Image 1 (cartoon, one colour):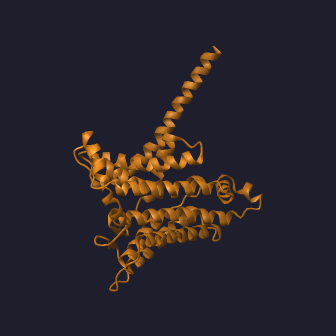
Image 2 (cartoon, rainbow, N blue to C red):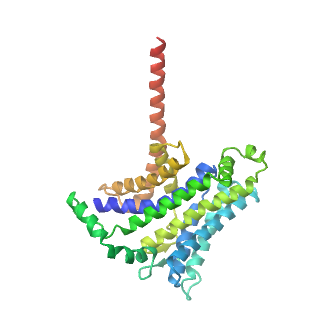
Length: 329
């Protein structure tokens, strides 16, 4: 059980980067962007292909981030310059990226124009590179001894991946917090709240939307690149339902921790992503559920995350009304 929960947290912290990207579009910009399902795979495909071709994993991950940014910017351009509905613009881009991703993965070999997947079993990734630095430190054995003393029977092979991803995710969180407090970040937030108002201050809302959607998909693609290296493969179908996963993370985090400030909200999104993976791991241990039920479980989690907070809030309002009536009496 401990190993399953550990793996859930480990994956959750990586998916949290994707959830931060979804937060930028859905909450900050109020832009329903479905490009996520495609740009997640774009990041994975770009990173995996470059690693197979011999590029350094860090360079491959950064190029994947750039590819996601370009994909997001195109979605923003379709909406702002092409006057296409934001939902439809995202769908169009998501569909187009499916073929683009196949082409990108096809570059990993000379014998194919397109490929549905790229394995990384024998390739160096960010995680294997970091393991070479982490393992000689002896931290794994130290932590495992403590955990074993607490009663855990099965122990993880390494704590290095979790440590590295916590650092990377927190750095990205701090960058997002800082950016949203800059002049451009405040303008993007204002665009999501009231376009007419920010236009009255001579701000170019079209450019702000393009930039915001681009940054969102850059984070999504970067998360995809890390997941591909963590899972040791990239696949054309690995992005299906990613927008739902991102939304679930955002909704769960906000429901538990609230949205009183940007720093608190971004932290809530990160924790929400980990909670989502933990709930999913627990659900999959139910005897009558199978791995093929993951999408159904995700849908149920999102429904509960949307309905439960509303029900709790209504109950609180009823209690407040009752107290007011008693006070008047």
